[in-house]
Length: 124
Image 1 (cartoon, rainbow, N blue to C red):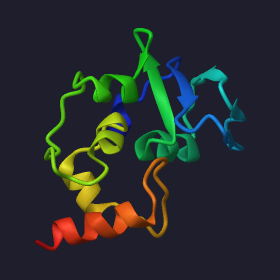
Image 2 (tube, rainbow, N blue to C red):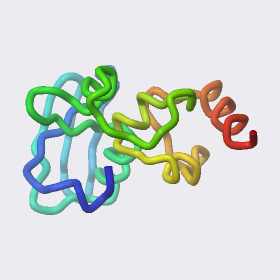
Image 3 (cartoon, rainbow, N blue to C red):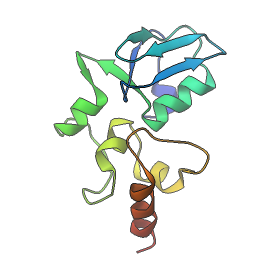
Image 4 (cartoon, rainbow, N blue to C red):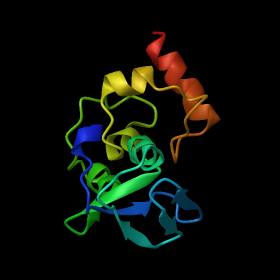
């Protein structure tokens, strides 16, 4: 997903239901299994959370993660890329994953072992 594809009024939910999210710029708040509608303004923190997969846009009754797990999300990500389903669910393409700064930003569902594997994958 590209930032310009995130539209006001879309419904979001947390990828990890054991957490919460708050964007102080827009006062968007999502806790555990709640959903929330994006307001007219989409804050930088919200945008980053959507791009990293921490917040999922719910569409047509399915989250992007559910679509990706069923192969419904089109992606240029190779099948053997570590964390592929998580990145596909976040709408990230191969170039975005390659250039993602894992030290500054976190991606829900991507831990240290996967980050190490991604580094090894791209150094092939």
